[in-house]
Image (cartoon, rainbow, N blue to C red; front, side, top):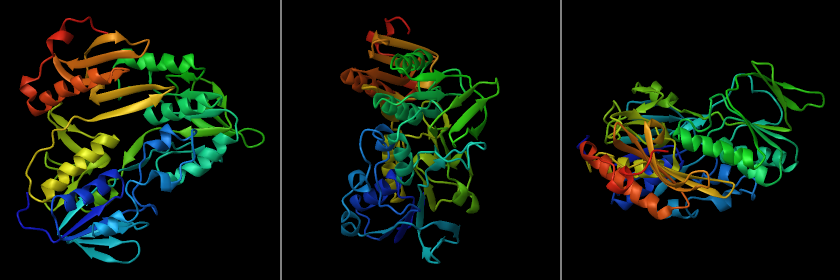
Length: 406
């Protein structure tokens, strides 16, 4: 950890991680210069409604602001939007507008970009959904009616599918894996979510290998798979996940691949440079390996912890990642790393989405999921938090150990 007191801290990335870090620096008493720089032309805003509320209501920036517009000036944070940092060298940021900004410490909160399928570019009415600027064209196409084809059955794809189907659209989802949400949920819960979508009339096809997107007569997009099947649509959403934006880190010579590798304090291979949020590969104390988490709440928690460590707090990050998803009025709350589980203990009924479940690996709690039982979810998060602070002492609580596995 660097010991000298910084006078200028630069934060690259104006998503929730970057914005949270900048505000935390001020809250913790840092009185030096704070630069908050982002490529998007918008001030920091909330991203979860982009997929959860896309069809329900118009998503104007004014309704999504993370903070009132005056906050940044009041906090003495120099917010620079629409500015791309092109290089980092010798303690100076090189920016797309020609400016050169020196810093004492740097936080990279660059997040990621929507993953583009090689055969899905250059087509009208084919969209991705990562930022606010993706919304107007996608929403306009959805509002004009016609079948929606969603490529990818992760959280974003399924949330948009559920929202569109609830609004009366014809919806088809294509997924390369054998089940949806393989990176998020244990198998019994993945199957329950799949049946939930099918029960509401959404056609979900798994194990699909796409070979290309074409245009039918009249310009309608269509998708083809390796087994000869094809699907027509009015609108296509490619929801194939995100790729971490590590280009700046790589140019700076940092240890970066599928994310920017950091230690438990958020420091990179350069002790003056830190990383937080979706882009950071950090050491998870329970899994005992570096992981990258793409969750809103995690980005906030991690960024706040790393900001404090940039000021010398010296506290390792041990928070349990958690998130939630709303599909057809069913809210699933998810904590930890459920997909790592080798067994699942359930109280309640998964099929009715009235349950709480504890996921374990080698007898130790690694995740929790609940629907309709917020009190149980909070209790299970406490169990997970104990495991994160003392991994060797983590154990399944007695009332849960006596239940049959799901």
